[in-house]
Length: 216
Image 1 (spheres, rainbow, N blue to C red):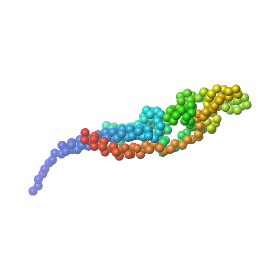
Image 2 (image 1 turned 180 degrees about the vertical axis):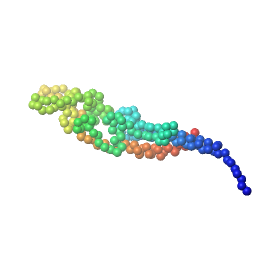
Image 3 (image 1 turned 45 degrees about the vertical axis):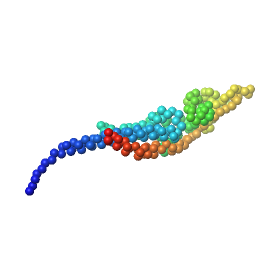
Image 4 (image 1 turned 90 degrees about the vertical axis):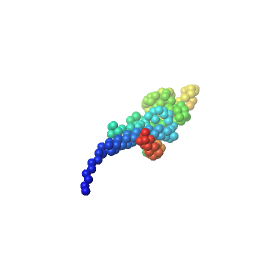
């Protein structure tokens, strides 16, 4: 005996489509939640690894590009903004060297000097390298001298110095302080561990975030 039967699967198909849609949106939301968790962890990592003098600026360098079902983007990105001029944060992931912006050397401010009174303090505005406006002059004997604002002078390949105190009877200043040491290419160690922090935070947060979004 043969029995012909027909089944209406439209309800089952609709339920399957709704489930697929729910999974897609839950996954995107959970990815974005996890990306924000990683962003916070990366910013906290900056505080641990570095002496951050301009916290707001460096926090904003850690950016997030979100996942989106509507835009068919099935992933989120956490990255360091490398578009800012002369910012070296990303270099600390693998290590490298700091290249001179101008000339052959990098001017490294001396901690404890008038240029940088303490390690946590930024360079004194009036004594930034740009504000010193060092210029080359010729002496009467045709020798080159580099002189700048605030009684400063430069010795090539050595450093920038500042004369302080009052002139003695000989016409010389009483003391001379080193403000900047000139280095050709200071090494930057691999200390950031950006990828390591991201992987650790993802492993801890992703499943929790997905379950919470899916069950909502």
